[in-house]
Each structure stands twice: as structure tokens, then as C-alpha cells.
Length: 368
Image 1 (spheres, rainbow, N blue to C red):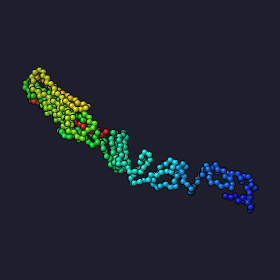
Image 2 (cartoon, rainbow, N blue to C red):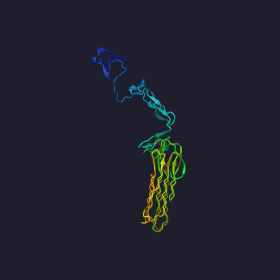
Image 3 (cartoon, one colour):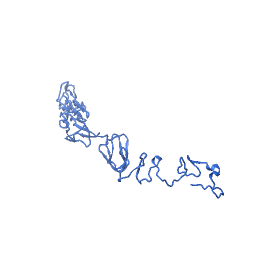
Image 4 (spheres, one colour):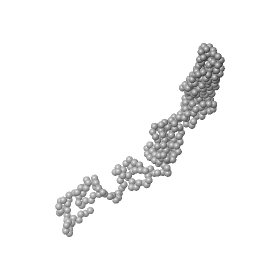
């Protein structure tokens, strides 16, 4: 604005040239020089303490630390946009979540479920809504802290289930989502041989029943169903064990032979051979013949007799030999094992051999 050039009690304008030279000296605000009588619209490099800005002619730009906008849309999420004005994501439909598409953020519906593939840490889920699917478990523990629906597509116990068949026949059905199965199976054990009644100076001892054959087989991509049959236990007194099968002409574990039934012997020494173990076929891991039943030893003249032990199965123990006077044989202890023979000395009644043990099929089902 114009300077009126008045001073003190002067009633007329005084030219600046008539005043002290100090009145013509510039003053500096920030880095801007201002001289009396001049008009300045811009001041640079100023620091204002406790200043209040009542209005701006234009919004502060992002390059200056602002948004570039005069107003911000209510309830929207603000996104950085380089040197351009900020962008926004609107809430959208009720229940939407903020998610990334790899480039930017979007408001969209929540996914149908959360999948946890594996892990060794505890997993805690505190949000609500949706299904939670545990794909494999390993050592992961799942904690659900609010009302949610948990869908376990695979078993919690290490991603594996087991089915065991110990008698009869039928159809095995692969569980949903099962990716592979491991079959372990054994034929029925043979029954131990009997000991006959004896007179003076005689003895008798039956042979041991043999164990059933053993098969182990892995199927990486199993069919939906397989037929099966479990070999029956060999009956006491020399009965053969039944054959165990899985699938049509796929796996076979034959039963063990029965022990030899013994007559009365008076000789000083008589040895009877043991029975033969069951054979096995079809397995891509193991096809193992069952162990033979034990032989029997009879010495009538010396009144000594030892019945044969039962053959040991890979899925069970064996029945020990009988040496006590006038004793029946012992049944097989585990799946597919043979029974031991009976034993008598002079003037004793007949003693039965022990029955064999039934076969078994164990199917381990894997989900990973």
C-alpha cells in the first residue's frame, strides 16, 4: 500500500528521501527481503509457532505432505497414490474384507474357508464366520475361540486312520479323501497236534501248528472298494489255518499247516517233524512265509516228551512247547500264530493240541 509519508506532528506528507536512511533499509522475514512501501505476497522459509491456519486457497499436495484433496470420503480406507491425490476403497457390501490382489487393495467378500496345510505350531482362530478346513494335521493343534464351523477333511491323528479286520469276509471301502493305503495281513495259524492216551511205558506229544504267511503291500492310488477274507484259526488237534486275501487275485497270505497228531510211543527216542508255515504272494513290500510249527520229541522208554511249539507270526507271538506231564497244548497268542501240541506220559488220557490264532488284515489309510 502507499505510505502516507507522515511523521510525528507533521501535517503534510514527508518524502522518504527527507527521512533518515534507516527508513529505507529492508527487513528480512524467512529469506524474503521486505522494504517499507512494498507489497509482498510470498514469504519463504518461515517457522510459525502456535499458528492457526483459518483457510487455504488450494489443498496441500502429496508432495508437500498433504492429500491433495479438500475433503476425505467418510468411512473409506485411504490408499497412497504416489505424487497424485490419495485414492480410496469404499466399504462395499456388508461382511466384505480388505484383501490384496497383488497390486492394490480391494473390498470383497470373504473366502469360503481358511485352509491350514501343515505346521508344528498351535493355530488360534479368533474371527467369526466361514468354515475352517484343516487339510493336514502333522503336530498342528487347532483352537477355535468363537462360534465357527470346523470341517476336518482328514483325521486329526497325524493324517492317518486304521481299519482292522479279524474275521469273516466282506468289502473294504476306501474313506473319502484317502490318498494311499498300506495293507498288512497274515493267514490263520495252524492248530497244534494232539497227544493220544497212553499205557505203561508209553508217551505221546503232538507237533506245533505253523504260522500263517505275511503280506505287506502299498497302494498309492487305491480303488474305491476291495473284497477281503480273513483266514480262520486252525482248529485244535491239527487243523490248518485259513487263507487271508485282499482284492480279487491281488494279495494272498496262506494259512499255516496244522501240527501232527501223535500216537503213543514206547521207543527211547522218537522225533516228529514240524508243520510248514503258510506262504504269501502279491505284496510289493513283503511276502514272508510263516514260521514252521515246532517238532515233537517222544521218549517212552525214558518217560520224556516235549510237544511242538506253535509257529510265530509277524503279527503275534507263538505258543510255547508243552513239557509238563499230561498237558493240553496252548492256543496261538497273536494274529496268525500256531498253537502248540498236547503231551502225555504213561497211563494218561489224551490231551488236545492248542488252536491256532485267526488271521488279520490291517489297513493304514493316508490322507497326505
